[in-house]
Image (cartoon, rainbow, N blue to C red; front, side, top):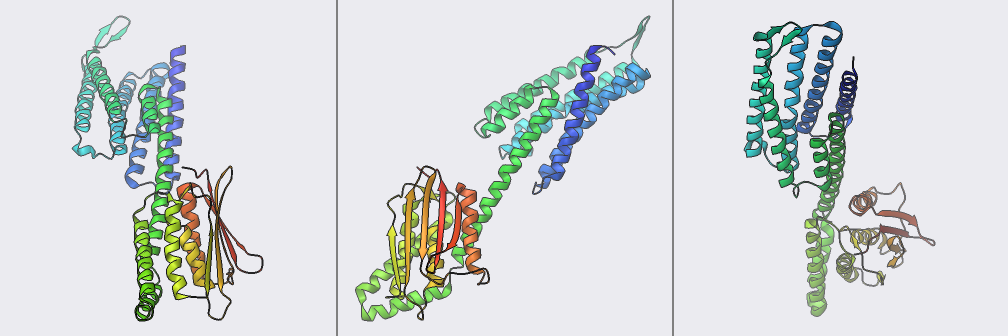
Length: 404
């Protein structure tokens, strides 16, 4: 074999290995949608068949001298290569949330692909049926393969233009990798596709986790304790006769609390700390009327220029009130503090209640676990729970680089 044959063999071998690796990656990844799984399996299988056909054709020419087998494998390699552009077009449209069946681009690429396949089939028939014998071998009529290459080149240009036009709909990472895929050698193309697949799956996983956390937060709001509402309304009912101005104030605080609670459901991202603080104060204002003389709160929050997930501070404080206020116990004191350091912002909620342990009701653990999960997913934050010296609980929330 000459050096070009060795080079082509190395390229095909690398393509084969990388394509097999791609299929293994697809099969190992969990949570991948079925349509994406089948698309990726089809893509990498196509490349395996293309590389295999090229290698068999090369061995047929060099070692076996089997012209029919070589011709057939050349045709198959050409056929499998021609499907790369339609598959890539499908991927681009899906990344842009476009339905391929309704896309003019998809129809155009399919037409060009059909013409190129027809040219490849015509070339195969021409080489098989109308070869002209010569003294030094066989001379083939190859003009149809030039037609095939023309249609393939047009498809590649159309796909390239489509990517440029849709660059704003693609992430920067997807845009760069697709361009690499279009312009680079086959083995690099496959690596780019695998990298796109892994990054896309990672983003999907993070998005699913965020959506799950937000759904849990929404469910927690919608499943608000009925007795809290009943008791608040009852308190307002008796206050109307005993202290009408105070009843009005409680009604305003309770309305503000409900409004902020349901507004938090619609929040997709983080919110300023001041909004969460106002939500917490509205809740505490209602509870202090219900537990007059049993609940005392202090806010020491000089630093407020940071953002956090909605329903972070308020549920922590509500958890402290729920498990700390008891007619048979001493009054509950809650302190909310914030401070800034070089890494970000820290919130501390300290209460003098009885605390809770691992053998307590699971409800506080579930609520706080939900907060911890949303902190991690939405802003890489952390939450720690520790017993307070002298009794009670200290909850610390840290949000890295949480400046506006």
